[in-house]
Image (cartoon, rainbow, N blue to C red; front, side):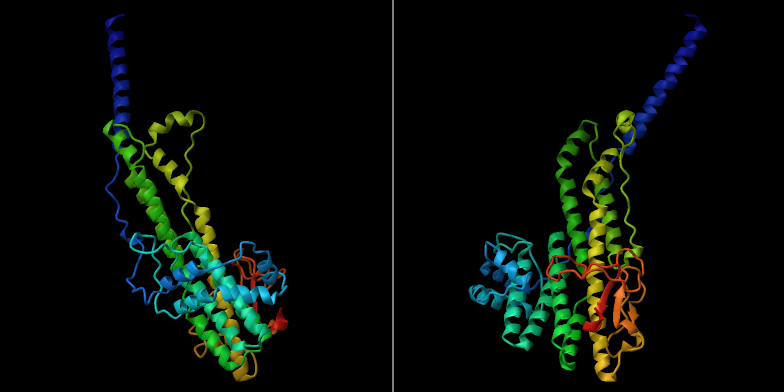
Length: 430
């Protein structure tokens, strides 16, 4: 090999080595983790409440005393099929007299602050404890109705709404939030049934409207759910830290926990921002997938964020968050629709006719006309059909087009299956 060829080979080799070193340096630099992110805004808010003033303490004790049949077939035949069994119901309510009494005491407490298990406190009830309590209250209300005690029926409706609203506003996890919304929906369904069947007077309507107005926006509980979700993600990332530390000591890299935690934090902050927005304005970030098929698996080392993205893709669930936002909008629509129905009925009693527009309800009955939680526009009103409605998750105004009514006792959050979520003011409007 002549001198010129040797020089050329040395130059090419030097360039190749230099490029390899540059690539390795770039990967090394970009593989470094960042400083721990500030996630203090995602910590769960807690308020110190004495056990005497905490409704959760009473609910926990009620759950510990709760007795429910192992075979629910007879309960289902009563609740779903209307096959009343007086002896069975009387015995079940008698065995749960202390449960109902403790539950009633909890509903009068000034505060509600759930807490987790600890060595200093008795075990907390399971996430689904409220479901059984709700059915027990329903059976009690049905018994009162059969006995003709109308005032107790309304109180049971108010109690069920309060129980559901407390749980939905202060959940410890997703399943508890959903359980609270289901109980709240049952309370709303019971209120609708009483409006259709009992011909309430003005005083009863005023009290019902006051009870409904005490229930705040449904996004408060969703925010707590997202914060609890982030805590779960954070713990999962921290638990991977030991392997990452060993890899870093060897100069390798598996996961950059701080960067991954920061990505999860940004995602959760976006969901929290969307919690108070109409459904149409919800735009959750999409976690881009990492290709590991074919040649892409051999090029992963050129993507310093590959491990982070794989981990984030595994943990984050935009579809789950979207579902929670939909459930929140359904619950808010149900609440506001019922508030409008009661306000319209009160207006009709006092003025002899329904209002021409919903604006006529402000400020005597409502502080403002509620907005459709799905598209953000004011709630729709059809005076000729005596109904108010919102558009639903399809975001299409079908002008109060309804499908078959759903069973009020089924565990769904939409009040009925239809194109729009429609709330008739009069029974004949159904």
